Length: 297
Image 1 (tube, helix red, strand yellow):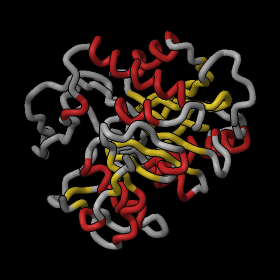
Image 2 (cartoon, one colour):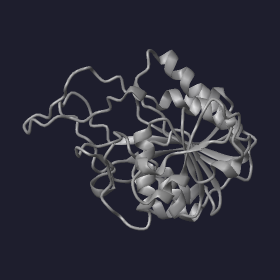
Image 3 (cartoon, helix red, strand yellow):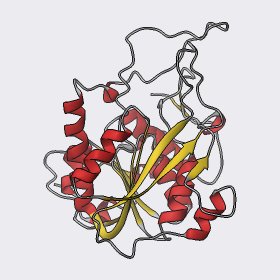
Image 4 (cartoon, rainbow, N blue to C red):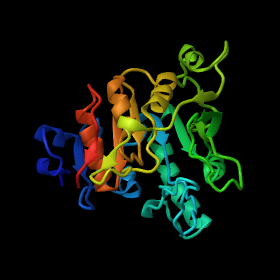
């Protein structure tokens, strides 16, 4: 069975952009690489990734759920009395650490199968999950090259003043095994992004705000952990070449694909939330200019 293109009318003008999305189905046994290149697949990564050909991608950017385990109560900022928009999405909820670890393991097993011998993987997370990600990577045979600390000059404050404000996230950069040679690393680009004379593993990039932040029709943030394009630009600049194939198996609102397309890389994205796929297509429409992005459905 051939994959179904998402109906053009679901995404608004121009209709031609529907060619950049596919709808996965249990009836589809596999995806030839040419069929999914520069597309976002609407489907569950655990179902889609096994259908992709092995050793077919040059870089993977993995932005998994953080499993934040936030309290089930409304948080309000002191003084201004405005609500805190945290992560309260179904995709960030797991029954236990064991369930979360099993999810990560299955994703990473498939990702490792899809990586070419010289491919690299970037995995990002907060203190809530990144240590679990790192352990599972090592247990599966990945070899960690570096961690990179993303410093946010504009973090969300800790309004209760009971702990430090969390102003960083961690990116793990890895290859599929210890013996990997010939992976891409552009030292000059890494040095350009660091302050000082050496390519330090500390990147200061503001949180995604303003016109770059995708909103829903009510003006609320559509995706609570949307990554800034500037962060993905650094990832792609230091670890890929023009024409490389980049995979984002949990694509959210498509930042990886938008930046990859702008930088001359090819990209395969997988996302199970239709509203995020819609946002991805709208962002691709605006790739040559910055517009306010509002998803109306």
